[in-house]
Length: 163
Image (cartoon, rainbow, N blue to C red; front, side):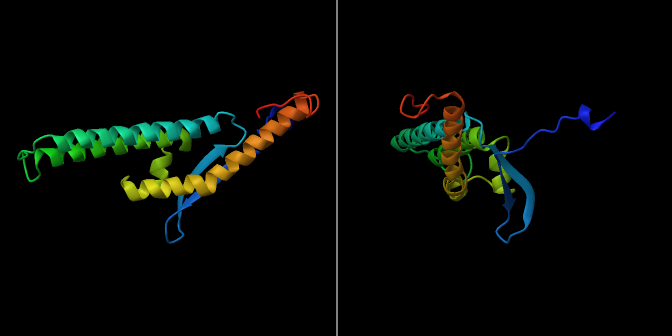
């Protein structure tokens, strides 16, 4: 057999983000984003929409719980406090699913590095997405648009693709 029977795949335009602990040690985990995946911006948009709905749902659940008369719970906490904790637990589980739509399989878990998902870690993940991933999405969409224009477009004045 010769090398003519081997197909080597090109991995251009793959954004790889190595994950490190706060003290700079590699976790061995990596987030990868195919910057030529035209569905990536749609996944980002879906994350934003579903996140907003999930937060609204939590707010509504808390309002309902707070309007109820509180009674003693089964153990240390009151019934309303137990229900708030359950609602928060459900909220954070749903947030993991929502963020993993964009970050990829177990993306949230990779970023948490063994920690539990909470308000602070959600803010950290939002900051990572905003500062380290989102700028690449904008450049990527521009590059895809330019490639489409150069291959299929007539002239810039005659046709606007994806604008």
